[in-house]
Each structure stands twice: as C-alpha cells, then as structure tokens.
Length: 375
Image (cartoon, rainbow, N blue to C red):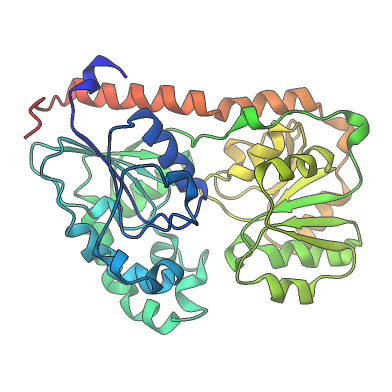
C-alpha cells in the first residue's frame, strides 16, 4: 500500500451484502486494496455473499432480523436509520460503495468520506426506468416512503466529501440529482478469467445474461426473439423467471444460474451477446467482449462507453422489440474482429481499476490532508 495511506484508519461501507453483483465486485477490490479495513453494512448473508465470509464484516442492528436479508423490499426504508447509527468516530478515511443509503453514514469533521457511487437510487429518482417501487410485493410500502427517502437521499449526498462515479452516465446523474461533481472510474471486470475462443467454436445462438427483473428488459428481448425465431440462451435467475418462461417460445432456452467458469463457454460460443437495459455501466457486455464476442445493445445508459458501435458491437436506438429485431437482422458477425473486441474489454480490467482508485484517493488526500492520528 502506498505510504500516504498506510497510517490512516480506514473504514469501508456498503449498502448490503446479500449477493455478489456488480457493486459487490467493486467492494471486493476495495477490500483487497485495504485488507485491514472493516466493512460496515446494513445486513450480511455469508451464503449469498460468500466472497466476504473471511472479511471483517460488521452489519448493523438490522442483522438481528433475518427476514430482511431475504426481503430487500422491507430493508430499503430502514437503511437510512441503520447507517446513521454506525459509529465511525475512530476512522479518518471512510470509503463507501453506494447505490442506496451507505453514503449517509455520519462522520467526524476531520474525517474524509469518498463515495464510489454506482448510481443515485433509480427507483427514487427515475421510477420510469426502474419501476420496482411501484410493483411487486410491498409496493405500497415502498411508494409511501419514496418521497421522504428522496429528501433523505439528497441530504445524505451532502455528507460525502468526494464522489467517484462508475461511468460518465452516472456522473451526469450525480450532477443532476445531487448537484455534485465526480471523478469517473469504471468498475473492475475480471478480464483474466475470460479468453477468446476459436472461431470454429462459435455457434448460431445469441446470448443474454441478466438478473430476471423487469428493468433489465428481459421481456423486450424475448418478444424480439419470439418474432425472429432465432436461438436464444438466457443465463440468470430472478423473480420474473416463471413469467418470462411462459412468454418464451421453444427457440428460447433458460439455463438458470451458472458460475463464471460455466458461463465462459456460452460467451465464447455465442454468435453475439444481446443487451437491452439502460444500465449505469453494464459488466456482462464487457465479459462477453473479453471472450471476443460482439454485443448488440441499447445505446442508452453507459453501455456506449464500453461498446463501440461498428467495432465491438451494434447499438440500437430505441427500447422496442422492433428496433432490436432490425439490429439483429442487419447484424453480420463476420465483420467483427475478436482480438480487437478483446482489446477494448481490457480497458476495464481490475488492475486498471485498482490503479485509478488509489491514484484518485491519493490526489484527494494531497489536496485535502487529514490527520494521521487514529483517534
């Protein structure tokens, strides 16, 4: 670790540790950079977030209520209070990983709080994109507290000293909703776990990998492939799985949850990877590119920061089945160079993330020195 950080008492903070999605991958890299730093969170499920079972994880009082680890809908309204109860008085550097409430921790005046923001909470600020606050179990509860949570969320953002955004797209949203500037550092993708397969291995199916929830636009992709009749393989699980299976025709195969090693073969063999969500970054398209496969994606969100139209994939302009159908009909896999696609993916490696993250923290500390006293 760099000398300017060695003597600091550092705490990591994360919304909740119940699975291992994109935010948890970022936190894991942060924890590897600062292995002595404890991780404060609202609730911790060692089974769902097994990568952290040997870490110093310190959950809030909400851990005493096991149902909350399973029903995140109930957890959301309670997290602001939970994070405000966490005692961080002995730490002089707090590094949060946040898409919800962890940025709202209370720190001493001499403490610097740097927040890696995955997104300002979509279902609070952009319900037209993420409608989870209006649908599903406990939707009435979520809607009833959304207004108050928006007020709290905006005030909590003022407690952060410096923001890091996971994309230019998120940086613009941080500026819009929080009136704050941010540095952009793309999240880490485990590029070394993937490699380009041989051209002879590529098959005729298209691939979609996602959590099966509405805002990922799974139904849009299924509607398009129902019409096209082309083979589509879907990897992932989620609350909408049964609904989507009932909707899909026989050309669409659901493979369920697979490990990264199991997914690699499907990435390598796919004719192309399909992606229709408006995402804050989008790790899975980069994983597909790490295997040398082109991506057919909706151009909204941050995907256009990783997928280069005409070089590493094809971007379509509207989130409609017809627009995706047209993109697939005009797609020619032979026009894409697998090695060139791989080189683009390498720009989002874990090594680059670690280097930029440390450099950014050191630059902040150089301009905003803090006491080396461990209180």
